[in-house]
Image 1 (tube, rainbow, N blue to C red):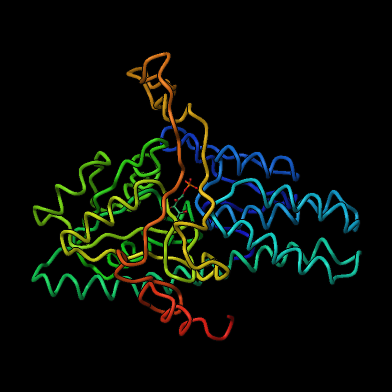
Image 2: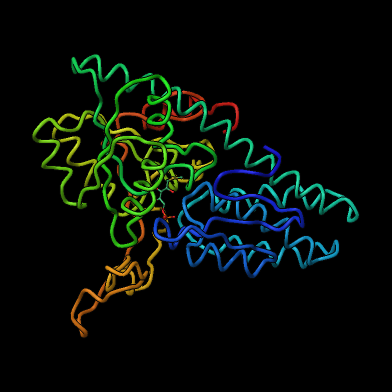
Length: 360
Ligand code: MRU
């Protein structure tokens, strides 16, 4: 792909250009990241978000940091540490920075910048390939579910955004949906709005609309009702960190959807590239660090007014407190299968160990 992906790309000056995901779908604009501080800020303020794209941005961030360090490895380590700690939950961030630094530590000073640029590109290219494989494995299983249900169309429910805005270049949860469209299969997507930041309503709906995929945005509390009435054939989400035990950290609210799916006997799949596993931990509920973001995201809602003006509005009383957990953990027992670039496996330690025996 040569450093060019749909959600981010290197420009002629080797700076990183990213789509500004804070203002989609109302404003389509880009932000150019030229140094470490801008990279950290873009990840923190969620100009870029989604586990994979955070990792990709961080990888290019380490490359940009190397351009500020003139071969000074100690300085680069400090800058990499800043990037690594810009958000706590999505493990692709730490994974990408660690991989970049492993390269930086063994390369000669004068080769460092070019080598790090190539490694960042390699990380992105690997993600692209992984999403292609996930697309096919997922679409195959979705076709099976459709046949088993005796239907000619499949209704899929998804939470948050796990499309190409979240992982280059087809996404994880949305990859099988794009693949079904290519195969000429009728697919309809229930899109959870995903409060408080509305990644579903703003980003997933935007991606699906752009691709001409039939979809309906629903309030976050609607999924259970739809499932009880046979309107959901399968649920699929992405992941921010998956433990060796198969527990999945993903956008807040994922757990409740998995519970409802379990209660209604509806398959609940999680799609992820291998870089989203955290093999060092087993119990995701106890061990995954869950981000707590600012109260403002809960207290307000952003959108366009009748004049097309993009703005935020307060939606709770002045003196009410708000609490904003960014993610929750869905226990492995509620997950039907993990769709990875290596294939589909059960979300448990034995099956994950079997699939990843070569790197564990
Ligand atoms: O807070 P965000 O928008 O970065 O959270 C994103 C999600 O939770 C996605 O569902 C997740 O990253 C999976 S897609 C790679």
